[in-house]
Every structure is written in C-alpha cells, then in structure tokens.
Length: 287
Picture (cartoon, helix red, strand yellow):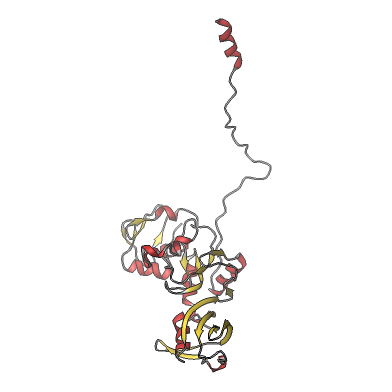
C-alpha cells in the first residue's frame, strides 16, 4: 500500500507538510537514492533519506497517537540548540520528553527572547494547519509596562497600531496587576499576532515595555501552576478541539492485536531446575 511521502513524513514529525515539500524542491529528500518529487508516493520497501541521513527505520514505527504539549517557555531560552550558544543551557527541545517515531514541532513560533505559552505537537499536519490559520486564531498576552503615573488611565491606550507596514487591531486592554508605575496589562487579540506588535502598541505612546508573555492560544490558557521551563500534556478532549479548529480528522494510533480473554499464554518458567541431590549422595557414599 502506497502513501504520499510528504504526508507520511509529516505524520512522523519530521516537519510540516509545507516544510517537507520545500525540502523536496531543494533536493534534500531522497527516495530510493533519487531526489523525491512533489507528490511522490512511499511504498513498503522504499528507502528514504533527509539531508543524507537514512530515516527509513523511523517510518516503519507506527506513530503514536498525536500529542500536544503545553510548555512555559522562559525568556532567553532557544527553541533548539542551534538557536543559542553553549552557555544558554538546555534548549526547549532538549527539555522535552522523547516521542515514539516522531519529534516535537512548534505550533506558535517563538524567538529566544519570547516567553510564555508555547504549543508543540508530534503531528506535522496539525502544526502546519494551525500555523496557516494564525490570522484567525485568538490570542492573549500580558505586558509589563512602565507608565508615567500611578493613576495612569488604561482607557487612554490605543487599540490599533501600525506595525510592519500593516494595521494591527487588538480586542481589549485591561489592567493585570502591578504597583505604582510598574504595571501589567492583558492584551486580547482576535488574531495570533507577533509579540513585537504588542510591544509596538505601547511604544507608540512612548511607554517602555520590559516584558511580553503569551498566555493564551485559541481557548488554551497558560496554567498558573505550570512553572517556567516545565511542560504538561494537553488533555485528549483539548487535542481533539485543536484538530477541529484546524479542520483535520483526529488520527488514531494503530492498535496491536491482543490475546483473547481466557486464552492468555502462560509465561515460560525461567527458573533453574533444582539440583539432583540423590546423585550427590551416591557420589559421597562411594568414597
């Protein structure tokens, strides 16, 4: 049975479909020793390599049911080791558990200087679909801002800012704590904008921003009890909701056949047999 190669590679977490199609155009994916063409089909027995590394063995492993992790990313932590330096400590990917037959892919892309709610999935199709829908997925951020006076009126803040040659509109801005002139504000948006746009919103009124933290993606909030640098698996009903948001069918892990009830095979007895003491007694009696 054959299957589209880029789809299979995405299901095993090598990258999103769009990324893998780009790799094919660049000649980075080989199928049976030849550059794989877009739309190429994979069949049992084919050999696949990416950037010169044979990945055929991983394709033979049945991918586990798709998983999604919530990660509370600290500011300054790189996503991969290649994004930082030797002194930056563990990257995000080095801090995550391994996943069978796949790897983790970032849904809401972040830079090393970003922090807060980071979503990762083992299904490249889901990552790709959610990235493409970023302009229709709501998000929320909290920003720490230095305001001119303790009596600063939040209503004086704009809801629209021109950023990166585009007009960015925010849904709401509300106080979120802080004392004196060092205040926190929660910024809601109907679209998942870059955190830099949130910073630009305050800086357009000459307000200094020290931190911007993402706290919401779609209907998923960053848990208050999730420490920085720690992860948590998303519940299966929330995972199903993300697939519905991405307009994808929720895949299921392949089940291994189990033994029928009442016909369980007895485990082999690995104990060594007891020594024959009668033979030992006969030897002693002959002396």
